Image (cartoon, rainbow, N blue to C red; front, side, top):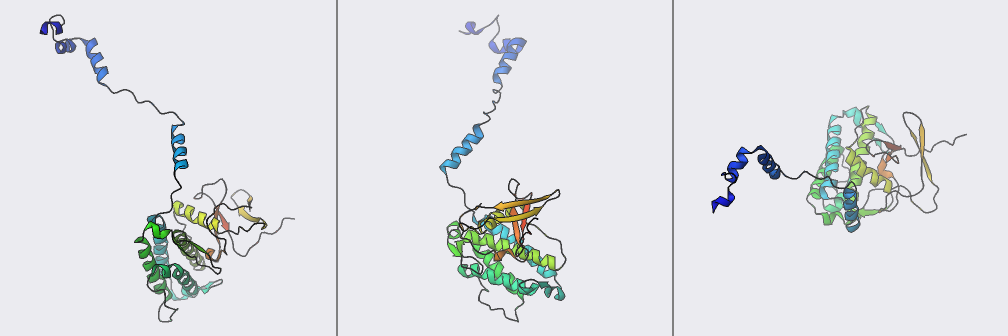
Length: 285
């Protein structure tokens, strides 16, 4: 029976070993097929279909806890460096650096009380330094949020501010991150220290929250904001809300020096538009 498999008296393996052409053909058959690039539009088509079939992702626990933890750590280090005279450095609206830290602790307590965090009921005792009161309350607040579920992040809580406003806990934690950062910047400015911006992805989250708090009443006159770049001054007119989901309220959380808004057409981490409180651009002649 083996005669039919012989080629010039050789077995197939013997023939392949002695014939360069057949050996090359066998080697080619053993190689995998070359990869074929997918159509250029395939990725966008798949992503577009996915976006239509599912709702946008919400901010998870770590997404709101990590930025707040970073700002709390930076503020804690900053306050630990202050000398006694620097605690008395003047800051508009809050009097001194110490008064500003008390204000921050009071606003943190708005969310801390909801979570049952400790140190929320201490009414500014003289024997309790402002740094300690703020730090212990912020640490307890952070621990409670980190241990919470994403379901709890969707529960509406009171936002800090002069006017009543409510939003999901996840947005309230973005506000806590925002205010901790802006007040740390106020303290750095009052004590001649360099500023420190959050990471780009955290700035993006903060900027979206800040945009949602801009006045959005129907019929209100558009606001003009002036931005001076390296080459020329620019104006941005805000005539409609960029982000929805929060009720309009005063921008008390922006701090003495205001906050930042992303300039249209620019990545948030690349260019931010400063918004100054209490200042209106002078009309052009």
